[in-house]
Length: 118
Image: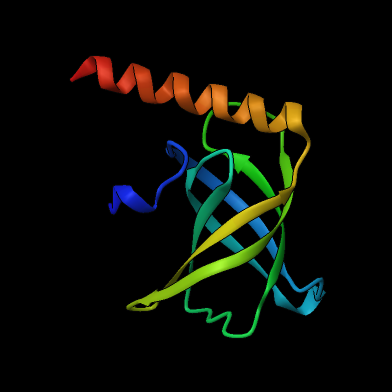
């Protein structure tokens, strides 16, 4: 990880994201969430190249026991192919502030719990 590029601490966020690119229902994919911060999220999907996509809308289902889903809108700021997987970073442009805070608090709690087990 290139620490100098990070403005905010990122936390692992295992889960699922239903992602729509450029508001096009035909470009809807299921992705795995990787990490999350106040400013962005990274996701991974298999065998899908979003070459010209600029905006995303997603609904996140965290990997812990909850019925709550978290919606956000953002912009694709980077993308790379790793074999048959596409990994991309999204800057968060629109997300309910309380929901974002809840997601960050839960992610931080899990990170802290795992760190203390080491």
